Amino acid sequence: MFMNDIQGILIGGLLPAFLFGIGSIFQKASNKIGIGQGFYLLSFAIGILLGSLIAYVTMKGSASSLHSGAFAFGHGFLFSIGFIFIAIGIVTYNIPISKLVPLVNMSTLVAVILGIVIFKEYSDLNVFKLLAGAILVVIGGVIVSRA
Image 1: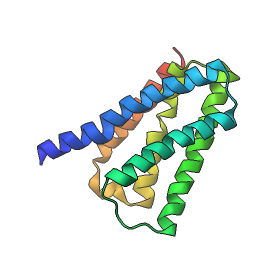
Image 2: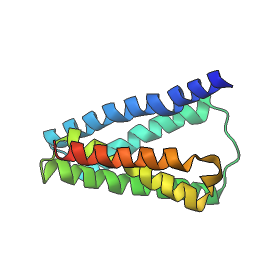
Image 3: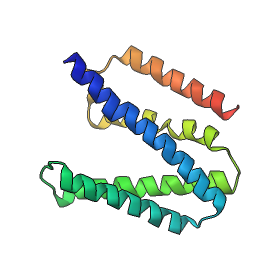
């Protein structure tokens, strides 16, 4: 069981963090070269579509429904609006990506709070550790934003 936990953390946590971090550098490079946000999001969506097609063909899937697809669409839509705001921070306000990304990644706190409330995940959590981690994330975000 312990080995599965480590593999799950590596594959589901650290690898995406690495890939998203590199992706943020791509976003900054694209915005600094000069790109309209509509074209950026279209190019970004094509990249997601390619990855999605590869996953669709190679991974065993489960049942799909219009209801589950609506939630996935909502996630994508909110993600795109978030990326527009990041681009505005980079291009309009010239904020370094190294300051923005740690603040953007505080979205994990929003997901944790909503997960606790909506999905009632509190029974699976150590609330003390959760609060301690959340406080550290906020402190880290404040420190990075003032760097």
